[in-house]
Length: 344
Image 1 (cartoon, rainbow, N blue to C red):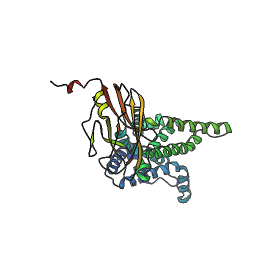
Image 2: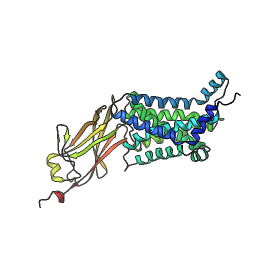
Image 3: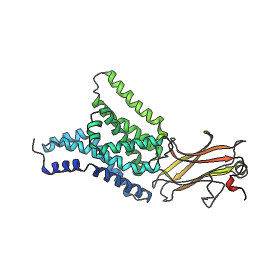
Image 4: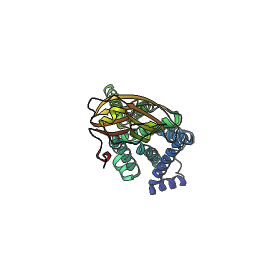
């Protein structure tokens, strides 16, 4: 085999010396794309497309490297391939992290998903963890691989194709299952029909688990820019936002839940305001929003029918069609006006 070119060796050496550079580049591109999406710039779509193209390379790595060797009579060095895989993981993880950090509802199960992404990002930039702890444990490596692809597609698909959050979630989940199956098969060779059935069942179980825990996954491209619980909305603007309100006041005038939701340009999405009283759902109201407005698409629901005794803790959960949580508005209904509202 011809010797490895000097510049390739230099590239590998630089990557070894500065492993955080790729991660920093991915993080900056993620922040840049986040800002561009917020400003309705189409360049964010191209950044997302380039990121997904890198995943096509990763999925077809063996085929493409074989084709390269046959065409140019030279094999791509294995160290370079390993670093290319690590680079794609780093770039993808740090690209999506700004989106998930801003859209996560931190006092919910979404903390777990975003925490896993952050932990995966840390592992991807620390070589001893990535090569000595993660890579030898093939099942763990595949878990990181699938998680990264899933998060990347959740972020990129609404930007590129203007798919709704519900459509993007289903497609990303199916794609992650399908594309992870060849990796599972290479790690656990299919020698008998029982093993083939077992691998299919494992893949389906992973997909089923992802679907059941979908409320734990933040909607990567939808986030609240303004919220209020108020007794009035005038000229599409809410009145004073209330954390506590008397029962007599809501009986006489009802109550508004106001949300402004930022979404990518061209995206049409159906969301729900789910009113809950002491943890139990009492109303679910659908709203259609349209992306592209910098301040967020303003929408509100008004509740006038309250239980005979509405005193207690209330929530208005803002959900996607598939049940992903965009945000939560909380307030209390009390018997008497708050002390701060009493005359002196």
